[in-house]
Image (cartoon, rainbow, N blue to C red; front, side):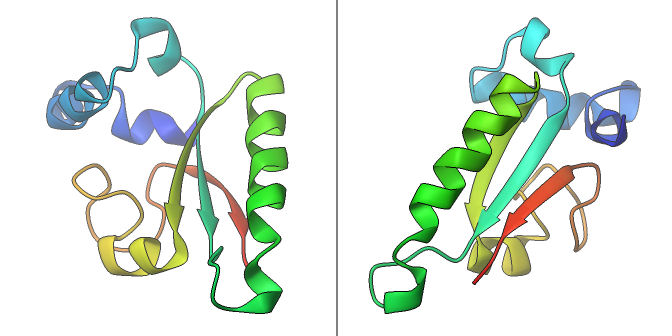
Length: 101
């Protein structure tokens, strides 16, 4: 699976240490990681419902046996997905379910 790019191998040891610091178990690390990106906020009326959509996506990821990682649209564009884990820009090793307005 694509998310193995940040979980498997000697070079990914720093990434695994961050997942361990987040409390991920060995069993969770064997599952697909799915990045969920949302532009939810309470300022733009059209975005106020996105938290409900994100929660439905999280449920779907869990039911399908994946592990979800969520960040805001702004964090995704600035940090190249999830800071410290995926170098560069884009989603790198994550299967991504993007929720955008």
